[in-house]
Image (cartoon, rainbow, N blue to C red; front, top):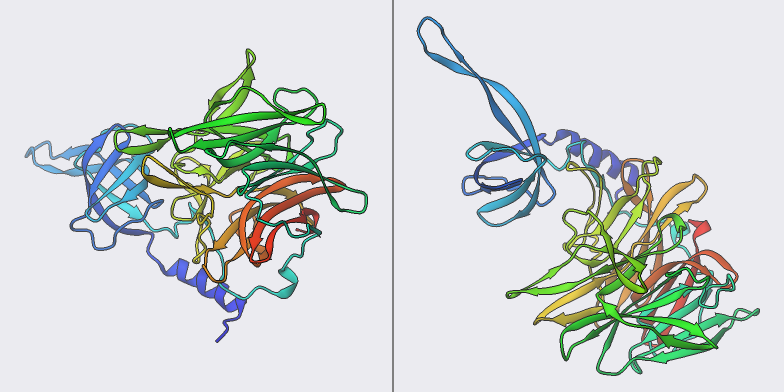
Length: 449
């Protein structure tokens, strides 16, 4: 039975009002600075990662001056915090300020607290008019391109498509002819012992044309490096490689900015360094200022957006459990995806230090449309062995949350997507995907969003 969308919206709103603001609390049994540990052994309703909590500090003690009897205490300052992770019998949280709370009890706030912004994904059927068709699609490649970039590699103000192919470990550059046909322009082969993990480009250093950055993993010695390539005399020439994985973002179609991350082995665990802006200084590429995103422990899958219209860029990122989260303010505000969508499923996987890591797909951001709203593109892959498919959801920022707006359905596995211009097409979203018939590149007009 289909439930009308209006009825479903009413049910969601009514349910949110009906839920209690506070769930059962728990005692702080350990504290390391702002990090606190809660005993959940007697807690019936467990908190979840991202939930808020509140601790009330003891205030002034009230004593009867005649008898000396203590009559109790006033309530002191209220300290807020966020649950970071939850185990069977304990939870770990982070306080909003560094203050002693050991031995005190916290109350966990319901996720329906209005202080949080929830991204509601209604499980209603999409109207047919909300399915966006591609503006242009390539003929079939023999194999699916694994990674893509849109680059002005010649400095002539025309972006070309850069695609990587795993079979020959090769990078190819394609231009678009006047009759919209792909023309192969240049290529570059990576040694077969190495794996290509990402492609991106930026005018770094600013030479008037883009430099292509190829992230490479060498499984023989467990090392990551990024190889810069530039077009010289009609050929791709390699520069000096540098350590780390490199991926870019372009908030509101501003000039593309690149960020670099490292995967390091610490004992038996693999740890990720926070994304740091890639800069070019003293003739070398190096990590600059790091993004301050608490809870970001994934590779790629993040972007920045001016959601409040105040010029402040807010990070938006994919969590390990497949949610999309954005922090509008520290430490209490979140926009969290719900409704069964898992955006962390990726076909791009590599093994490092005997552990598998996924490279999350990008989160392209656009500003425009008929209302001048912010739109976010988020990919969900269905990795069914016999019938793979993917949807690129266009999520619209409403001022308080993201909601499903339109969908770009793909009958295959989505490997990468990037925003930018391509040939004569302006403000596009380019997606590369694979089917049983081969690989394709599809281009969508974001003005239609």
